[in-house]
Amino acid sequence: MRRLVITLLALGLAVPATAFAVKGLTGDGSLAVDNARGVIVLNVRGGIIGRMDSGTLEITDPVAGDGIAPVVKGYQSKVQLGPRHWQYEGDGDIRFRLIGGLYRVTVAGWGIDLSVVGRGAVVLDGSGFAGEQPGRFSINGGRYLPMPDELTRYALNQTATTQGQEKAPLGAGPHGP
Image (cartoon, rainbow, N blue to C red; front, top):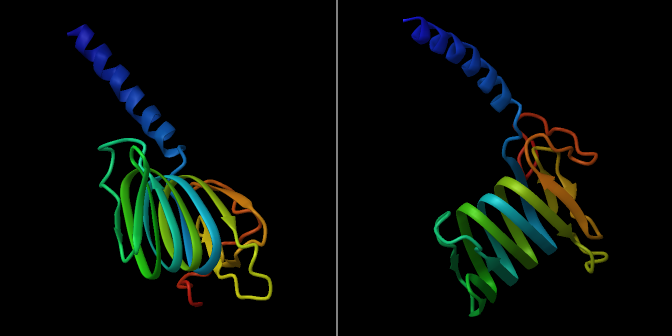
């Protein structure tokens, strides 16, 4: 009986401590891209849904079975570059969905719209479009900013700094409040 009481007491102390420790972990971050031009590189565990008017999409799905297989529609050509590594190209409405796993994705083109939720790293580069509207992005719930005109890295997680971004006002979306 004494052993049972000591075990229950130890569990009673351990469970709240564990819950407090889990609460301090970083959560999923987010990336929203609206009508962008340039190159976007994602190394993310989570979900990616996107489209582009024209360009190249390169997908690496390094871990078989850790998520749903990538879905890509509207492309004109597809090349397998290696095991679990594909490149898609096209003009028109190229749509893609990658859910629940670890993915490495490069999107290069224009008319890029993306929604990403998960953890990982993001590289944005809107250079090469001087004088043209480069599109905009929001990282980890920050306000929308123009695509950077040089290669810029961001962490995708809930507690990452947003590198000068402020939280968007409630109700603000990709097309304004």
